[in-house]
Image 1 (cartoon, rainbow, N blue to C red):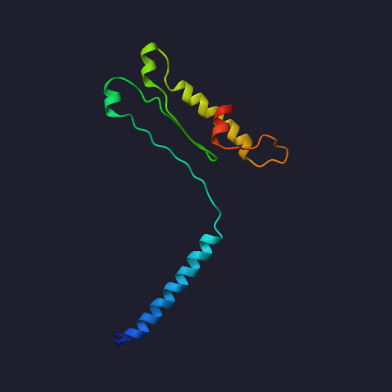
Image 2 (image 1 turned 45 degrees about the vertical axis):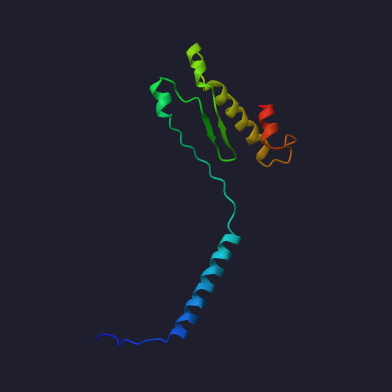
Length: 125
C-alpha cells in the first residue's frame, strides 16, 4: 500500500465538526456528573513549624480524617512545660466527636440521636 492521499477540508466544515464534537463531549460530561454520587473523602497532613521544633515543643494539633467527618483541634503546646501531653485533650475530644458522628450520621431507623450540626456535636463531646 502506498501513502494515502492528502486532502483538505474547508474551514467552515472544520468549525462545524469541531462544534459538534465539543457538544457531544459536553453532553457526555454532564450526564456523567449528573449520575455520579456525591463522595466525601478526607485526609490530613501535619508538619511541625521549624521554630516550634527548634524550641523542643511538639505539635499539639490533632486531625480527624474519618469517612463521615473531618475534625481539627489545636492544643496548647506550652503546657508540656508542666509535664502534660498537650495533644491529649484535642485527641480525646475528636475521638468522642467521631463516635457521636458515627452514631448520628449513619442512617438508622431507630436512631433518635440525630445530627444537629457541628456546635451541638462539640458541646456534647
